[in-house]
Each structure stands twice: as C-alpha cells, then as structure tokens.
Image 1: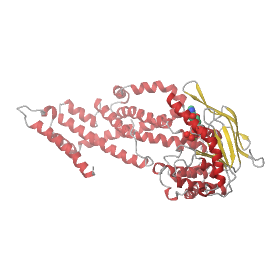
Image 2 (image 1 turned 180 degrees about the vertical axis):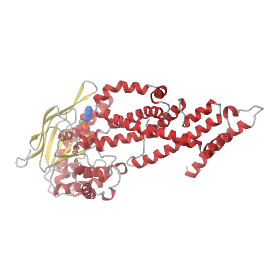
Image 3 (image 1 turned 180 degrees about the horizontal axis):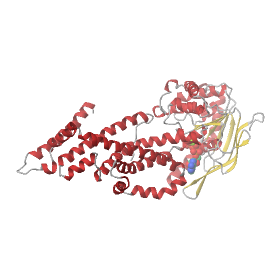
Image 4 (image 1 turned 120 degrees about the horizontal axis):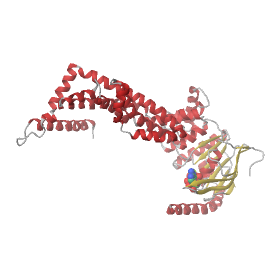
Length: 275
Length: 261
Ligand SMILES: Nc1ncnc2c1ncn2[C@@H]1O[C@H](COP(=O)(O)OP(=O)(O)OP(=O)(O)O)[C@@H](O)[C@H]1O
Ligand SMILES: [Mg+2]
C-alpha cells in the first residue's frame, strides 16, 4: 500500500499487543495488525469501541511494546519512545498546574528555547486554534473542547514529523468539529505531516483522510479494510459530505464496519455481564 | 446564606452558649448550682483573665514561644517530609526496604516520645520542636509520597512524548503534583505542629501556652485553664487563616482544594 517514492513514516508489521488482566489471564487486544503511513499521508483509523485503536497509537508512540511484530519509524526499528511523533491523547493530558499558554510553551522550553520566545510562539499557536484570549486560564477553567485545542497547540508547537491523534474532536459539538477539522486540514496542508488519526466517526474519517483503515472488534482485533479516499483537496469538511463519491465510499465502508460495531457492542456487553 | 446573616448566626451561637454558661454558673436552679464555678469557672472570669494576660503583657512571651516552636516544627517537619516522600516515591526499592519501619514509627503514639525528647534535648524549645516534627513529618511525607505516586499516567506520558527528560519530568510533573498534595495536608500539618508544641510544653517546660495551662491546672484555677484554651484556639484559627491565604495564592490552578489528612 505504501508509496515506494515516499519514505514510510510509521509502519506496524504484524503487531500483536497483549495485556495481563486479573492475575495470569492475558487479553490479546490487537493481533497481527499491519499498517503503514507514508510521509505526508493522512490516515484515519475507525473501529468499534474497545477494539484497540488507542493501543495501536500507543504502539506507534513507543509507549507500549508489542508482544510480537515490528514497528518501524522512517524505516528505523523503534526502540524506546518515538521522538518524531507528537501525540494528542484521548484522555486529558494537559498539565493542570500550568496555564494554557504555559502548557503550549513547555514543548519549546524543554528544548531550551528562551522563555520569551517560547511564550510568543505559544501565543501564536493559541491564536491559531482560536484560543488567543484564553492563555492565562488553567485547564480546569476550559471546556473539554477548549482543552483539546490547547492540547493540539501543545503538540503542534514542537513541529513533529508524525502526528498521532486519538479522537481529538471527541468532546466537541458538530459545528466546532467542522471548524476544527478544517483548521486541522489547513495546518496539515501548509506543512504535510504524517497523520494517524483515530475517530469513531466514519464521516469525519472520510472527510479528512487520504486513507481510511477499519479495525475489527476485539479481542485479537486486526485491520480488516483499507480504503483510499480519492476526494480532491483542498477539501471543506461540510461541503465534501455532499459529494456523490463521498456517499458511495461511506456506504461501502459502513457495510463492513457495521458488522464489527455490532460484534464489538455484543462483546463488551457480554464482558460486562461476565464481570 | 448572605455573609452578614451567616456571621450573625455564628455570633448568636457564641452569645447563647456563653450566656447559658454564665447563667448556670451564677444563678442557682432549684437551689442548686448546675455549673459550680469552682469546676466550670464563668465566662466573665475567663474573659477577665484573658484581659489581664494581655493588659499586663505576660501572655506575649508565652505566645511567641509557642508560635516559634510551632513554626520550627512545621518547617523542619515539612521539608523533611517533602524530601523523604519524594525520594521514596522515586526510588521504590528504598521505599520497600523502609516501609515496615515507617509504618511502625507512624503507628507509635507520639506523646510517649515527649519524655525522651526532654531527656535528649532538655526542657527548652527543641524538645517541643522535635515532638512537633515527628507529627508533621509523617503527614507531609505520606501526602507527598502519594502525590508523586498518583500522577496521572496520561499526563506523565504526555510529558515524555513532549520530550521531557527525567529531570524535567521531576520539575514539571512530579514536583507540582507532590506540592499540591502537600498543600492539601497543610492545615492538618499546621494543626499538628501546634499540638506538638503545646503538648510538649504541657509535659515539661518553663514557658508557652501549654505551660500556662499546666500551671493553672496545678492550682485548680479553672478560669485560667479555660482562658488558656481560648487563647490557644484563637491562635490556631489565626494561623489557619494565614495558611488559607498562602494556599489560595499557590494553588490557583486547582478547581477546589480537596482536604486530605
Ligand atoms: N492496560 C490495559 N490492561 C488491560 N486491558 C487493556 C489495557 N488497555 C487497554 N485494554 C483493553 O484493550 C482493548 C483495546 O483498548 P483501547 O483503549 O485501545 O480501545 P479503543 O479502540 O481506543 O477504544 P475507544 O474507542 O473506546 O477509545 C480494550 O478491550 C481494553 O479493555
Ligand atoms: Mg481509545
């Protein structure tokens, strides 16, 4: 699938991830999943809840070591943390004791940038995510969506070559999702990074990505589908949804995804009953 | 409730309680004094005792001594608690080795140490400071230890992904988290610093509020005992108020401080 011309930014090769649960039992969350993201490519992962999307991102970030399989970052085997990646976590990850602007500036400060310069750049990033006036607020004074946006600025200010995003627009309302989606596309077009974007919203995935990857329900989740999105760029999130091609692709992917979503749901309610 | 109304009712509680006390201590009910002044004194006597202490100025010396002992106990105990708590949390092996001893020492009622401290450090302020330190240290220690241990793993991972070294993680993640837990235990710690000082004085000294109360008890001067208790309470409330001010400045980033002890 990967373009031979472009270097492969992230390559998971038959990655298997197992967790130890309750004593000696082992839960294999992801089994032999293979996935690659070319340099400058925008890949969206969609899958039923609990299938292992965050797990895959953690593997790509180097936070989690797969039990089997290989991870390669720009054709180098990944050992330790992935230094080329910026990671926007699914859960709240801002430093609660730092103001929004300090949260953004920290990425530069720890690299040794002078504070004044770091603050200035941070202010610029806050403005581009629409929070220019919220710099001196602490995370608990921001809404869930505003926190995500600060998180986005925090990651982008370091200018990582690879962007890992775990449901970044999860807590946002539909309108803000579109605004943020367009913003993300705009930023990405200006400076093409490899993006691995997790979402549970298939429409969002198609609207944003170059490729949409579908995961099966766990346990032992694997990648069961990979679609190229040939919609022309630049795209506008709300307009692209009107196109015929969009609908055809959506129907095609959904016919596969639907079964997995039902399976995933059945499994998690079974597990809930068992425990 | 509006502030003024609240204040009014708070004052009313004091007025009613003091009036009842004064009434039953001075007016016989069915030919019997319900609160014999010899055992219960009267609010008026207590107030005049307090007034006398302040008018003559004798109280200041005792207050200053107790304050000084409390401050020293608090500072030494907190610094020790923070350092050791931090060290243990970052070095699980050290913590595992010392764990049973820490638990043993914490389980020990600290009052029994007072005579030993008096023996080692004399009857001056240092034996009281030492007693306070043993109380403050463990509170701060456990909170800081907990604070470092319970840093959100997501926040920690975020720091790592942003490129923080272990030292930077310590400075930007572990340390603020530990401090916030320490501050949530501050009220308790300050309270215990005062307890250590007063109990130490009570058990053997030549000055301080504890000494004053102990002297009064020795001659069955219940009025002076109560007066000492009131001065002590006011003293603790004032210190606590100061702590609240410091806390508000330093913990602006928190939604609402959660008290832990
Ligand atoms: N540390 C862990 N220990 C045990 N099981 C885990 C652990 N982390 C994740 N799992 C399990 O692995 C599976 C995949 O989890 P993951 O968080 O990757 O799901 P997800 O696809 O991101 O779900 P969602 O869309 O709800 O965020 C889940 O069934 C989860 O219960
Ligand atoms: Mg997830």
